[in-house]
Length: 104
Image 1: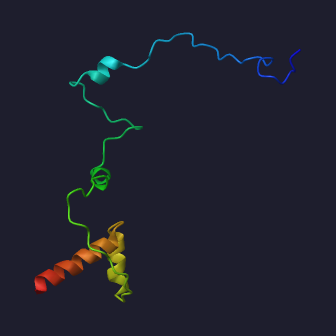
Image 2: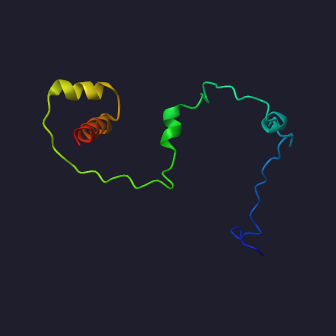
Image 3: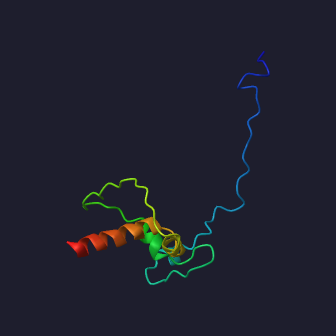
């Protein structure tokens, strides 16, 4: 006599099969190179900033290391850089680099 906890005595749960096994994927549209992708709310057109952020630096020179500095500047200048959007520190660095290169 088998105990109720033995694997063979337990009832197996059976997953109900789908009513149809037909795929709902439109393979013809996906495989047709002439079809254009149309941006939707769920899948908007790619933003260039998003694409540029994903580009790897393969084969490029390593980016120069950064140094942490504390800098005093006019509040209005800092606010102007910040008002331009994210990446204001990078833009400040670019302005300083341009000044350095122009002074050489």
